[in-house]
Image (cartoon, rainbow, N blue to C red; front, side):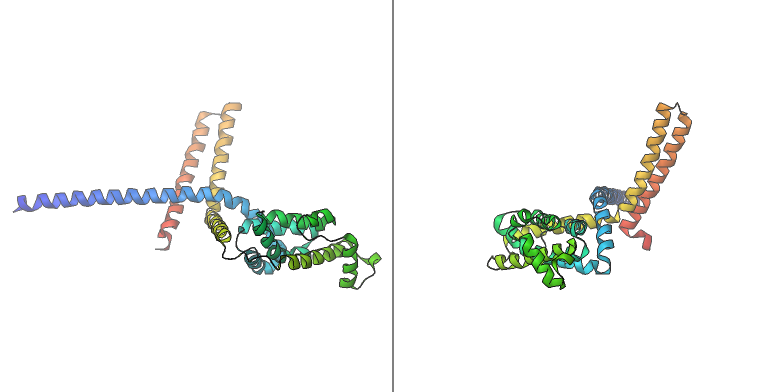
Length: 278
């Protein structure tokens, strides 16, 4: 009886062990790929982090609403990072009051960019640089030509001041207001951008990059921890080479670093698999 039962049981056990091994290997490989991809995405997210922080600091409590307006008025064709970067640049050039009108600029310039196969961010940069410099040449290049004398006259009406009392910022506000009004009039006859093939393809590209950045953002703490570990290793190696440091001391540093790396890897995999919530 035992001779009849034991071989099938052993065979089934071997198959089960083989299956478990393959499953463990597959999960480990998937987790490793996930971590590797996350760390690669964190490089993009690291560049976005400072821009996002600056955008949130300038826009304040209205930051989420401003970002939604920028996305919508740019027809979702621009990544969040580039939208926030343009807002920060606008703030640097002309201040917050005029930077807050960036969604309106995107609404009109997206049509111009779509019809003429130009980059909309290039056009918005020209617009705001033109306003910042009070340059009619730069404004003319985006179709919103305004003479400086017109801007001054318009600003006197906006602020109920004599032209001698106007500040540079108020003149810039007058120029931007006139430029946007003229862009609105000149783009009224242009076809809509939404739901065109070009818009949809660019929207997919922007959404993909946003997802990549969001994923990488979750790996930024891991990336910072890894950077600290590697900096310690590099310092130890330089000390060994340049200052004649002891090999034993470097090996201890290496061992401690490996221990930290193992802990980081374990915590990351646990978080990915949700084991930390069990």
